[in-house]
Image (cartoon, rainbow, N blue to C red; front, top):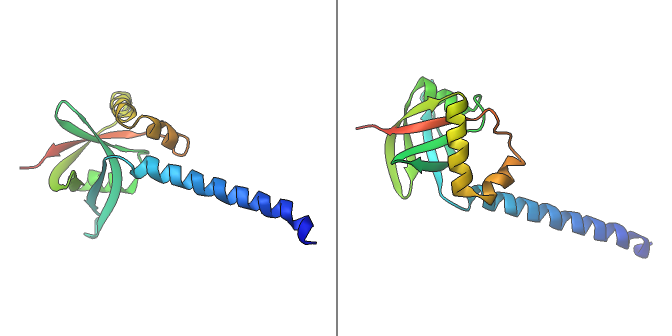
Length: 140
């Protein structure tokens, strides 16, 4: 009976290794390079932290809401002053969504150029065809 179970055990082991490898590559793709943390506030004052990729163009930082329904984006639209933890510093910004095709094209281009293969890997897992660019303006 044990000999009959060996092919099944090998198959289960191979599946476990494949799932572990997939998870590891996905984690590395998401977290391996330059991740910022956004702090937004819900209507009741609860602070939420969201990890995002960040890109820069002409001295301006941009982040992406993968879909318009993202909770952090709704919170930032209601209360645009947010905090961003990035590169070892916490900075206050005003989140300015740039909806529409131009904003989408900008953030997709910036993230593709910066994150390369990781952006392509994540694209297999998350549809960003409706993503929203969010420009971060420094609050004085």
